Image (tube, rainbow, N blue to C red; front, side):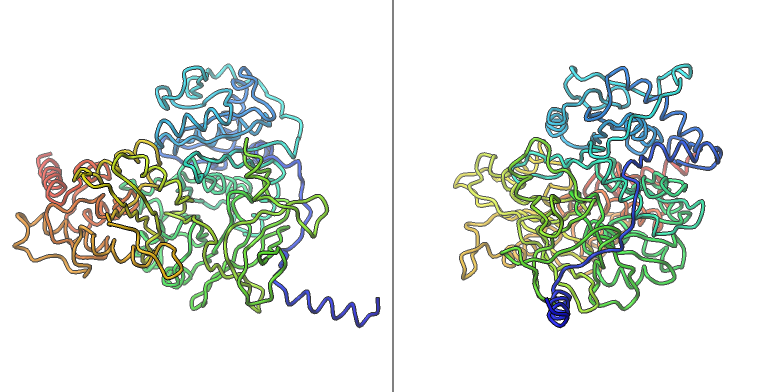
Length: 607
């Protein structure tokens, strides 16, 4: 081949949407548990974990991880043996993950807030050898033994040797939403984790940083938010964003990773120039307005990555005024390919499906070979390797950054969690009286809400929506429960015969129990007490619409735990009442919540 012909081919390839990140060698036998032990040896008193139930130095964290590993050996924990863990925001959750990895076993987080049937399905599919959990939690089959690490004797922590390195054995399994309603177990290997730990070093956080972990323990974002600080010798701060002291904890952080939905609750702190100096936003599309505010006087990183490719595959340092906001370029050792329906690269600027390749691509779905084969396909640029087809539609700009456009399938993100719309629809049509159901996303100022249109049978009960909601609460996690329901005679269709999602979104706005969507609170004479009016004003600010009824119901308005936390903080600022999220969820109407606020204020004044 002539030199000119080679130049032409290279030039043409550069015009196609195939991107490669920085390349770097990494130790495939890396294990975070090894690193924590090494840090404990030379900096034993350095802070490692700060949690609501207490703190651990690196020496204490390593000692407890060793102690738990010794106990887990009694359940034959080792390579390819799954250990279920549910400890929430406890220092023992971090120690237990390290104990599992010390033995080369498989970490399987379980979320106790999920319906019992879902947790039981995960336990069965992953073949758990043991569950590490506080005594009395998780009503899973009694056939699976339990271990509460808080009850272990100090004498039980003889030295536990590290398992022989097996880079291609599973390090953890994360269960995500499946189209049938059955969760899918994504398996990630120790090699995958090692590559991510290597890439995280490029964030270059200041020594001794306090890094917030606000993710629920059942999600891979929790693993990221634990790996990031510990791999760098920093402290992980297990922080509950719903706690009444949340703002104080947030202000003291040096770094945090969170969804835009959660970060928006701290806008006032950031606007005042306080809060962490390094912020990684991930899990859902970042609105330009949030990026504009949060990139001022701090480092804002817009990160992107499906669970199947070890949490993060691309990122971008975002600056005020960036338009459009992109998900950047591939991180270390990853490649991004934007392909057409024939799996051929598209030109720069054209839309295509994003495929991801490199040592971060996971093993696949546990016990689902057909689904694995469909999503993890042969990588044409690396013999024997695979790439993951994300289902995300993107385009590559001239500066070689990637812009997220949307989804190619029936999947959306709700507060950073993946939701398969078909799973929501399946749960609804299982209820007597529901003939058809269409689930869809409703764009909000930050993130998406979930809507559900129901075609109901003649003679269906008047409270059918309440019946459907209750049935869903028994089978689906909270983030998969629609915030808005609308009953229709038939699903509206576009000229192409597809469901008219825009029309359904408008129907949800018309059906909203909030009524008028202006932001002002209703006139004072619509409410019985001044506290009711004050509560309605806070709700109006949070929901960005007028709340004009004392019987308005927080959950029926689309309220969820993150919005509840904003209401609680708003009530604290406006009325000085130390209410909790539980107070709101147990008294969900304006009138009931206002009465609870009055009672709490009166009780505080009597002490």
